Figure (tube, rainbow, N blue to C red):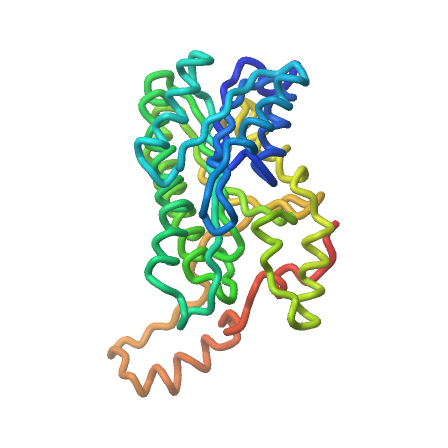
Length: 304
């Protein structure tokens, strides 16, 4: 018996990369899987049925249960069909994996409104749309799991990804509020920041030795390494795990802290701007995050 026997899981962006590996493992663990993927390009252009249908076919050929759904998560009506297809075909929905995403990377001063909106629509609004569609079913059955994909680009920061970073950190806020609001009806919500080589990370520039080293590390981390944590969080074995932020880095699973106070300083007569400059900043400076910090500074060691 698999850890997901009898469960129904919807995975967005499941035609390729991390989403495909998640869908394959969930099916192997006994779940019926809705494979959502409109088959768009990395930047969200175009579309084809092939990726979703291929993943569904591969699951069925291996003896599992799956259907393909080609809707865009950015469209509320389309996102609703993902959940409706699960209920119509398999009778219920037990877990939602919000993995779908696109990239429109560009340095901040060149970022267009369209590039901002497109990325926010797929990542943040998409996670909202699919989660909102599943919520009535989760509430009625008194159970359910949301697994949202965040990124160290949001948790730590990254160059040329203001849109993506904002969306991914926004997903953390969404997940936290869902976890708090839905706890009383037995529903949980968690985030995963994946380290893996995929279409999304293949766009990382390699124009410096440090960037090349970063890409080489990413290439050593397979998308299949992300799937076991997703399968666990979708299962009943995680019934007491909610409102958490995880990361997976090859064979290492990381639990992230949330923003919490690290230093405090009180001036009973109140602060002036000059006093802040003269007294507070020198006191706080040892605890400042470095101004140029990216994930490579937080994870400087080779993947395990």
